Image 1 (cartoon, rainbow, N blue to C red):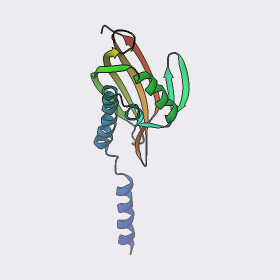
Image 2: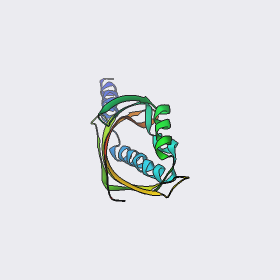
Image 3: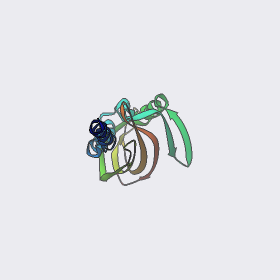
Image 4: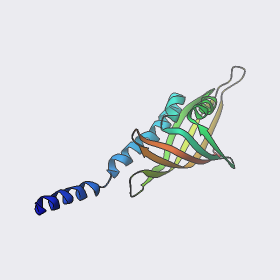
Length: 158
């Protein structure tokens, strides 16, 4: 009987010590980051915020705001409106670090965005900028979601 209890206890210990699948988590996050670049090129506001949590803490332009996914979606629609994106590329691969417990992650990204602003009453105006950002992600039963987004950008030559 004692060996059966010891065996059962050992089995529980092994199950509890199984590490999260970091490669699968990293791949899921990387796919979501790439989807934001695709959403630029496709002018897809829903795709742009698909990985956002229900609320996201946004740090940008010297301010801190808590925004719902609906608020983010409205802001992204305004951002995409009247723009045609010709490039949304990673300047360097995203840096993804996953916590030891596999429940949170940080992503540092650096991208180049180019395109033109369209106007009914004038010529197209080219634009270009680089953006660097830090996102904090949380994993729940439905997958990975951005809970904090901090970014900075700089205009560059179109």
